[in-house]
Image 1 (spheres, rainbow, N blue to C red):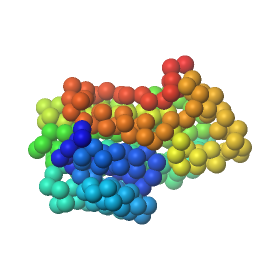
Image 2: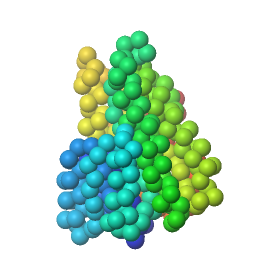
Image 3: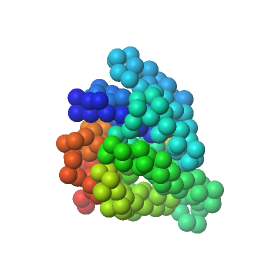
Image 4: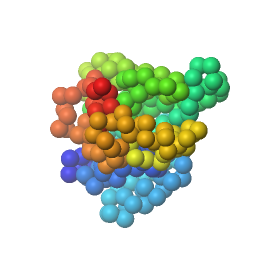
Length: 251
């Protein structure tokens, strides 16, 4: 029960890593505000409630300031406060600077980067009353380059450095800010990235070959890392980047 009595907002909670995080935090004692742009997030909340835990749902776009305000307000109205924010929502589309359409570039930066600003702007004033933790789910591609993914890599790299700057800005408020960089994780998000390639199976094997541990990660493994960073066990950790990538970036 490492987050017993705390209220946690999880974005991207409709599937994959976000859903695993929301479920784990609930098991560990938190009241969870689960958010996603997809109504799949309702299933996440139903699973949490079926276990006798507390959860609220917000269906909204993290790339919109008013929706982020609603997510934070829901935590306050439903559970009386907010202790941690885990921002896992993201999108990805392939492309280089010459092949990517401008609208795709702007969409990816809005959902993956602008949302970090919007959500933090809404959450920090409430977190500062309680102290608390903010965790951005970035990516190993925020630390190293890759081909044909210019917007996603750019956005995730910015998120990693934004976490460092926010950690300095809000340390005096008792707010810890960190980023977690998963490698390839066996989720619908990863599978969709393979399907965007001309040869999905070849793309899958090429990705797998880059992981020294020889397998994709699981959502549960990333959720375990997120739980540690958001809990009091990590009370002296801020401005850090934890990499959970099976050795991908060690090469």
